[in-house]
Image (cartoon, rainbow, N blue to C red; front, side, top):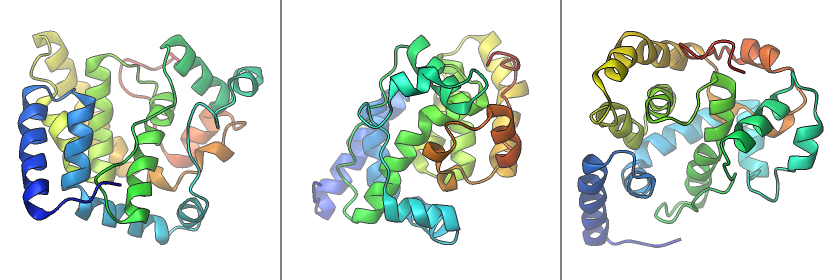
Amino acid sequence: MIKLNLTQRALLVAGSAVGALANPLRGDLVATLGETTGTAALNTMRDKMRMNKTGLEILKDRPRVTGDTMDTEYLSSLPANTFGHHYYQFMSSNKLSAQRAETKFVEDEELAYVMTRYRENHDFLHTLTGLGVTVPEEICLKWYEMVQTELPMCALSALFGPIPLSLAEKRLLLSEQIPWGLACGRASAFFMNIYFERELETDINLMRKRYKISLAPRMKGSV
């Protein structure tokens, strides 16, 4: 954990904000901006977790999603309809690692874990929503995350990420994907209260129904 004084924090916010606005998909800059500006949202997220039985368990257990905790051999052996197998397919087909950047600039230990958990849930959300890893799909997921978490960095990516997209991609985003992100974000269960590690053997469609998470537009039938 890196402690910052007010001047250092202000400079870090300004620098990461300028860099992230220039390239909203720079994960390192957006992550730094999220940690230095997300205190209020993180407190709200923690409160929602504390008020939920499963969320409280997650805060107490502090499970981590890493290359060590995600057993690929086990996941690949699960039945094809399970959430765990779909997660394995998503990660392997996109050549992704479960490892995420450590939280460095959130001083409160529990809030730092909330930020870490948010990051490590990201690929679980890709799996449930059927969204891939193209730029438009990442932006689409950020709209969902923005509604769910109220994190400023999600708003930054959601609002400024579309700038480099083609006209056709922007039209699809505006007509279908953003409305889906807003609607699904409001309707679904708070994803920070989902103990994903306990759902690996659950039928993925039953899981979507239970948590009211729908497939994103143009992705139906892809998983």
